Image 1: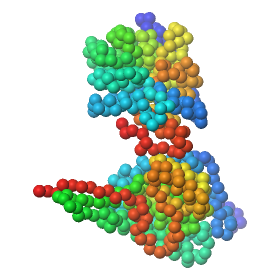
Image 2: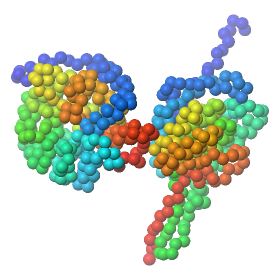
Image 3: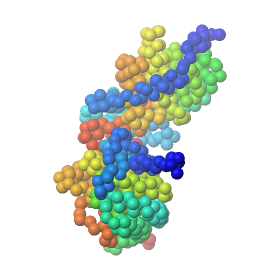
Length: 301
Length: 290
């Protein structure tokens, strides 16, 4: 056995019932008034505003970029989001539209969402996205190799992609919905972090289940323990299925209670989402105006 | 006979009707409902601000489907509701009588009038476009067609006095034209409304088209009137002048349509005033051939 597989098989197993219950308990916390206002603004700053559709057009990407810069055009106190997340072919358009702003530009790469393409094609995909202006790369791991036990191959591929990224941040998508067990989630997290991931991300959003609270909690435990072991801090990004402010609050509570306050920052925690932002904005309007808002008062994406 | 245990009646829990389901109030609160003679009848759910919010979400979700259904189908579904109402005639008569007092005969007459009123509005569902809309003559080679479109989500504060006939008279016209509704039932007389919810749930009406809340008007109405995702509000059930005025002000915030309070004789034929109140006229120009 290689050193890597020894390390991964040496990780303690996950108590599934316990993890589910812990996440469910944390999800009952109630966040109100000023804490809620603070959390909403933080969540907006953490959003990776995403559009990953076959039907994406330059026009749609430009619109989304405008929204990323000023999510609430009528209120200057509303922060901009963390990043835009698009397909590689849309990176030049987004780079142009985001010029001069602090919004990051993330691109999915490596034959997203399946990752089932030869390695050199996936590396070229990555290099092209970086060359076009992406400063964050969301890669998918080779689940086929991982599930068949070939962890070394998964590791080597992540290392290769990290190298292809250059200065760009690398987010590694584990696609936890396809990993079958919580033990696998823990192993894949450690594998990705050892291979050099700057962020570990739950899902592509293309398969169900996408991000869940217990899985995110496991990954937060992994980054916490990894920092303790190695001194390097890695970020976490749940993606897919987070649609309401209430959901986002639950995630923030779990971040605070699991990894700690150091991760309550857009540099270390992100939400991969599209419809979440509108709900955050509506809740923000509710807090500012005192009455319930509606979908007529946010943009149609 | 003395050996046999006396049967205990199964007591009914009166709940809300939201999104086709019967939840309790999210607040867990309830309040005592008394009959016209002062005797305690039941505990009804006392809806809260958040129940209003949930009901509006349910109504908004149901809106496109209900507005998109053909007027004929809406009419057929309303007829179906009338059939179910008729089937519960005796139960409604009991409830109306305990709530409003008066004779058995008067209560039965009120129930019959309510069923007839429902049928009357059911008939209007596919006829109102012909009355309110039509082709307009214009000075050019165009077809110019107007048609009434539903306003959207309508908040209805149901009349306090007439617990069934009045309730039916405000709900039916709103949904016949394709709106979905959040209805606050008469505070003191909510039980017929809860039973109406059971009727609606077992007819073919999609969940969320009518959402029934029981509780205090003064507590719930302001949230409904100020809610930006509500397109119209019917103030019929507001007895307090000051409250009515503040509701109108709140409703102006997002330019809601407001149906003001008026003296209503629920037994008289209503005319199409309420049907017209919850429609917007859409006019389309189309080039004529040639």
